[in-house]
Length: 269
Image 1 (cartoon, rainbow, N blue to C red):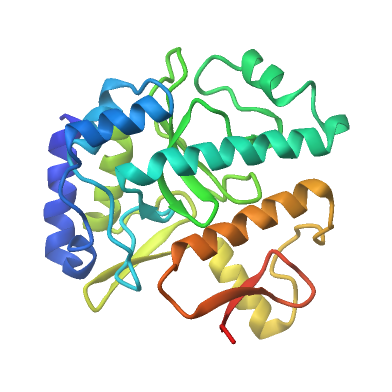
Image 2 (cartoon, helix red, strand yellow):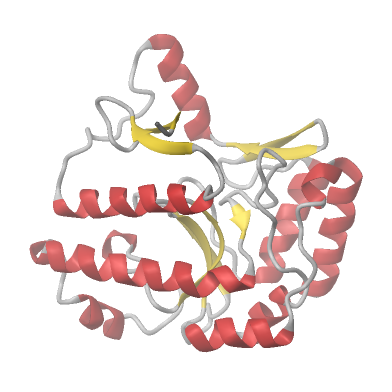
């Protein structure tokens, strides 16, 4: 099969079982818009160009469900800003704590030219092109050279992977998403259910958080949050992502007491 064939099967399946989510998909981006996004980031593999020739991401979902586990599929015009923001934040993180890294951010990038090889601490690299996002959680295509060029990976806002696998290609990625829709197959830790025409996902982290609320425990063996320069920069970026994600609302993010990684929304005053 091809990426186009797999995508068409996915859209058909979504239209069947989760029509509300299917309707959030936007028609394919114009060739000129895709070329501008590529020119503003890095050279794209042919399959990534094909991917954005099939759709132009999702409209703001607002409870309508997500097509992929990382968050909303990005529109082509959003990609350059997401990419440049992440590169800027990663450079600031390395500069803020030089003892944690082997060299400056440009030096780290220069030593990691082959696709599939990750930086220490899962730093976002300029060769990654975001394709889906939720706040600063990203799913991206690795455009660097080598056998894994065009692979699809996930990066959470704390730099981890949160149980999402790596795919060797966009075709393989779309196939797994389709099978999750048609056969209820989990994607790593993530499973999905259909509710009122919306395809919504959960993960083991969600279940752990629910257990925490019931039992008063941590639900996780993660260490307590510390206000290091790196953590503060990541938090600032996550908050900025929340604000950008809801420009038309009268809500603003606020920190849950005791752990700034946990955000809630309150009305603006």
